[in-house]
Amino acid sequence: MVILIFILGYLFITLENLFSLNKVIPSILMSVICWSFIMFFNLPVYELDQHLLIKKNPQYLLLFHLGKASEIIFFLIGAMTIISVIEKYSGFEALKELLHANTKRKFLWIISLVSFLLSAIIDNLTATIVLISLLRKTIINYKERLYYLGTVVISANAGGVWSPIGDITTTMLWISNKVTTFYLFKKIFIPSILCMFFSTLIASYASIFNGLFKIKENKLSKDNLKKGFFMLKIGFFLMLLVPIIKTITGVPPYMGMMFSLAILLCIVKNYKYKSKYSIEDIFKKLDFSSILFFLGILLSVSALEALGILYRLSHLINETFYTWKITTFIFGLISSIIDNVPLVAATIAMFSYPIDHDLWHFIAYVSGTGGSIFLIGSAAGVAAMSMEKVDFFWYLKKISWIALIGYISGFIFLLI
Image 1 (tube, rainbow, N blue to C red):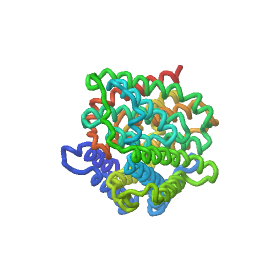
Image 2 (image 1 turned 180 degrees about the vertical axis):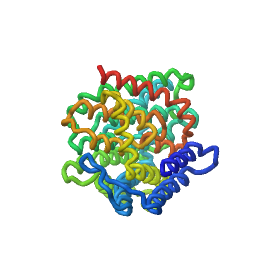
Image 3 (image 1 turned 45 degrees about the horizontal axis):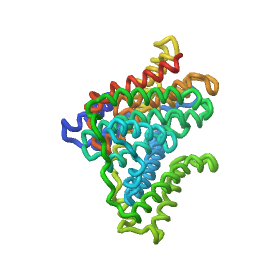
Image 4 (image 1 turned 90 degrees about the vertical axis):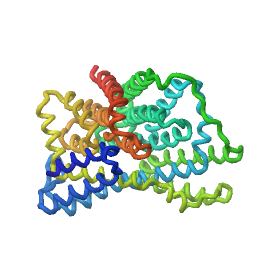
């Protein structure tokens, strides 16, 4: 029954335009109904521990999964607020000064490469949020912007898989001592480049990228342009500081993001960079509907995880195919539909291969890049869907097949 509720909830999310229903509503309802069903009928729920499903109290598990989801939510709030500050001080307007392209196709390649590199540093979700803000300032035509955005999602997810801080799943593998930074880069960097390259190459042949490109001229004064560059550099530096803080102190990433946010807000209060916006104004501008949508998705998936459904599904796939290479390929396809975090968590518990075994590098690659195939398959895609109101079926028709070719191209390189 919980699976049916989950499927119906996702159906309402994907058919948002048809039902004229904001997707935050089915997302929140889906999570509440799934967990209410578990508690009302006293369904057995489990926590994965050392290859075993340990039966737990539903109240405890809900609180546990709420805590896990909150780590991501507060990280997202911190990142969105930092980006909001940069935007208020015209940081993205200033960034346009660094983008030089005379054709739409050339600009596509620039945006794709920036997405790829930036996601490895500040994670694919944050990189996508940054580039959505940049594209809003650069591409006025909404239809054109969507095509650029589709490439951003693919490139950001590809860029996140070769860095231990670039995607939450690679971070999980890194923290669980399944991969090391050096071998993760060595094994995954070229496949991720191929994924990004072939996807962008195919997209570049779309007729919408024909013609000349002209960035709308900045109307900023020299003083505001200087402030914009300053806030841009400070904001990016503070986000880069997050993994450093984690490495030095051991605190979770969301704590590092909160620290960086507090430092930036202190700078905002400095008289030299005051503007008509107060700190309260900055928080009022946050898109809390997107945050609630993300929370609903995470708690809904956690209900499936608590019931052991995802764990059993992983085992079923593992027993069906004779080699783990095919298994990982299937995992990548599943991660395009269902959140890749519980799938990777189940994989870590299922297999006992040593550190830096090829299996872990395959998992790192497929869990990140596979999420690009459908818009709901990755945090970057969900953020794009929420912030730019991207239609699920538009992405399926125009972008999914491109993402699939990119995914397969990198996977073939891993095989050989």
